[in-house]
Image 1 (cartoon, rainbow, N blue to C red):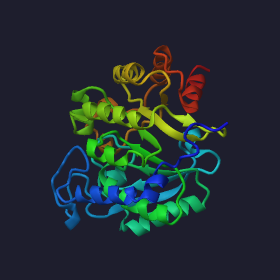
Image 2: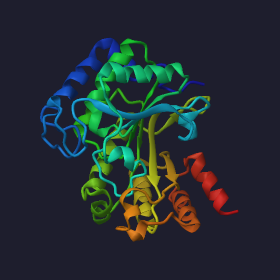
Image 3: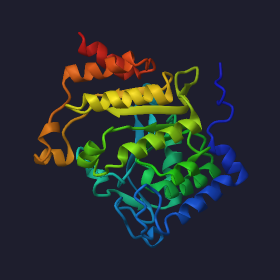
Image 4: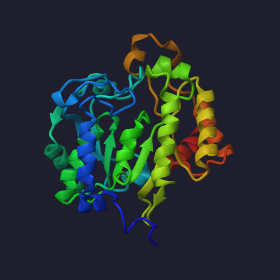
Length: 320
């Protein structure tokens, strides 16, 4: 049985046929002139290859691309999620699990045509989707590349895999382009966001961004094969010693987005980045078994019954 959106996805195909996708790319490109692509609104002229906090100028930089078999079941399926790891970032998380490519942009700068090539290569490899990892600071470049790829036959759904530190302007440009939004809601309190993400406004921006994503695509829909077709898939990385942050985030999800929200509670935190330098001893450890189990239990107690299989498996393993 088909979902309501299977006959019209991926969403960007209709925009490409009408010329609207190319118009969106042009509008996004103008945002680079005095950059307002993300909430920092640095104001630098990235069209002249100048850089702001993200460290990326006119062209997006790609650290790696491949069929990823470690994503959620509904994304990886049996052929993998076509991940494109974009270098640079608009946050400065001290514990970043991809610190080596986010804090100092790695990889080579790619033109729109070359970035389109990568998407088409992933499609040819049999991937179920194209998964943009850390896209918030390169929305214009991705729209330019997607317009090229759509003209050349790209037909995979787009996954927008983000920290949730996104601007209203960029998200509105992505409406009707992105099929699956996958934000990671990291922290709830401004104090901890200041200490660990360098952005005290992160929680407010993340809540606003996630609500906009949900407005655009609604709860996650799966096809008859169990693959994600459209909607919101919300992640939360469980941090050591911060169960109150997890509880506040999960309560907000339950109250504002509803029990049909698909949630993945991730247990793979490990000390990385600046944490390894000894400056943040309170998070220089992995979460305990009890912390991980309690995080999943909190979600279930709050009525969030659409937990990713990995979260449920984690709870079962922890209770052995």
